[in-house]
Image 1 (cartoon, rainbow over the protein chains, first blue to last red):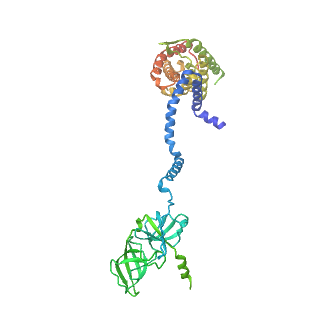
Image 2: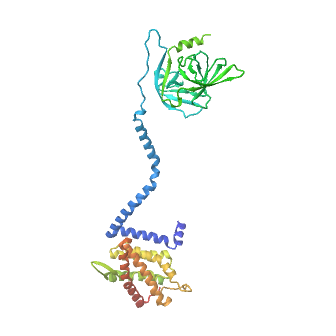
Image 3: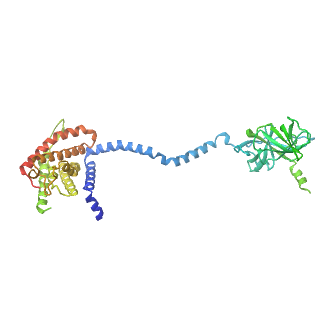
Length: 272
Length: 174
C-alpha cells in the first residue's frame, strides 16, 4: 500500500489528475442533461463503429465452430443427393434350362471406390455377403476381367484388380495350353502370361481365354490378345505379353461371378 | 509549508469561491439566447499556489475548488474537470515561462518576485488552458470547435482583465 502511494506521489500528479478528471467527467455525464445527451449520441456513433470493427477482427475466432456446423450441414445435404443411396435392386439372371444346368450366375454391381493407381490396385463394389458375394469370386467388366473378390462386408466387397502384383489367374489359348496371368506393375494395358510351355505355337493376335481351372471365372471368357512371346531359355516355358480387351482402371460396373458348383468342386480338391 | 501559508491558501479558497459564485457568475453575456462571455476568477487560486507545492496536492485542491464552484453553479463536474486539468498543466506553463536562470527556491508567482510581465503571461496561459478545457467539457464534443474558440476568445480578455485587477488590488503573497 505504501509502495502504491509512493508510486502515485512520484508520478508527478498524473494518477491524481487522471483519477479526478475521470471523476469530473463521470459527474458531468451523470448530472448535466446536455452533456449526457451528447455522451449518449457519441457513444452510440463510435460504439457501434467500434463494435463492428471488433467483430470483424474477432470473426476468425469463431471459425472452428462455424466450420463444424457447415461440415455437418454439408454431410446432411450430401446424404440427400441420389448418388449417396445404396442401390438395393438386384440384377442377377438365373437361367432355367433342362439340358444345361446353371453353373455360374452373375450379379451386377457398381464400383464405388478405387485405390489410386499404383502397383497394388484394388477397388470396392457395392455388393456384399447379403447377396452371397464371397471371397475368391471373380469379377468381370466391359467384356474382360476386372479382378477377384478378397474381402466381403454385408453390403460391400473389396476386389483385387487384375492390375495387382499379387494377382494370379489361370489363362490359356484355345488349343487348351495354359499358363498363369499376372501383371508386372508397369503398363496398365498389358499383362503377362507365364509358365506357358515353349513348344506351344503362339502367333500375335491369338486370343487369350480364361481356363476355368481355378473356379474363379467361367471357361472361355476372352481376356486379351497376344502381342509378343518371349521364350525363356532353360526353363522350357515362354512369356506372352497380352493386350487386355478392357481397361480395368476405368471400369464402373462389375459382374460378380458366382460358381454354384464351388462347394462340390472344393470337396473334390480336398480329397487326397 | 507554514501555518500562515496554509491559512492564506484556505482564505483565498473561500474568498475566490464566494467571488466567483456570488459575483462573477452573474456576469454572462451573449446573444440569441446563448451566452458566450464568462468571467472566471477562481483559476487565480491555482495560479497563486506556491511554485514548489506538491503536484498531486495542487491537483486535489483544484478539484475541490472546482467541485465547490460546481455545487453553486448547478454544473456538477464542469468546473472541477477544467480546473483539475489547469492544475495538471500548471508545471508545463511554468517550465515554458522559466526565466533564464531558473526559479528561485522561495519564488512565488507574484509580481513582486517575478515581475508584472511574467505574471500576466503566466495568467493568460493558465486562463487560456482553463477556458479551452472548460468549454470543451461544456460543449462535450470536439465537433463544436468553432463555438469553443469563440467562447474562449470572448471570455479570455474579460477573465484576464478581472484577475489582473484582483492581483493588482490585493497584491497577494503566496
